[in-house]
Image (cartoon, rainbow, N blue to C red; front, side):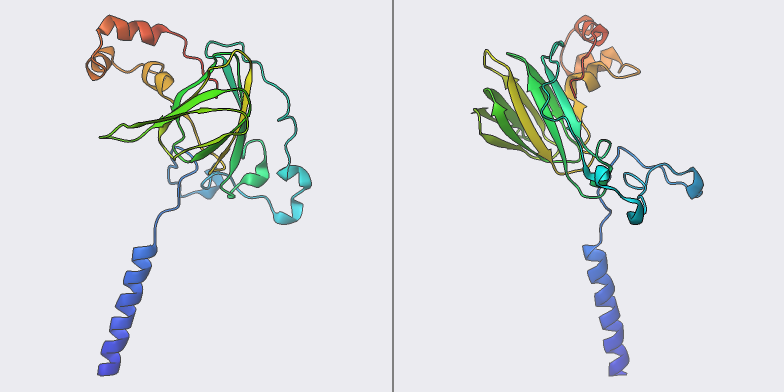
Length: 224
């Protein structure tokens, strides 16, 4: 009898332990609608996998990140991503890279990466960077970065970069996801499709509704 009780207790503890340590994997896209028929499926937490026997060196290669990008746009910056869409071999590896070019006084507008932390390295120029913590503190952390400096943006937090120099700036950033995603705050709020009710936004931002409508009519440039 004691042996049976011990066995039952062991099984219960084992189940409790497995349940305590189990969790859903982090999503690699905004949503994944369950589907019974796999023939009509599109993604499996990112991408289907190629047979390893058919992999080639080009599956793990990207060229051209040394080339400056055109920053002649309303925000004065351009982001060049190197994620799983550019390097298929990044699938499931949990890392990606971007190059960011800034015109003088250009900015990478406030945005967030819902699936990744970011570590930024300044190759050329001087950047004013920062991030804001979550509610209720909303504390701002900022720093002026020069050539060779590094700064970290924690996952999911709103952050930005601003070229405060008179010359072009270049930065590279590593992100902790093969597909980190990006939500540019102004674009998402005032440039959504369809538009969010302006009366709602006017109250949420404590603005005149005509100001909100004016903001919604603008063309919101996405440098990412």
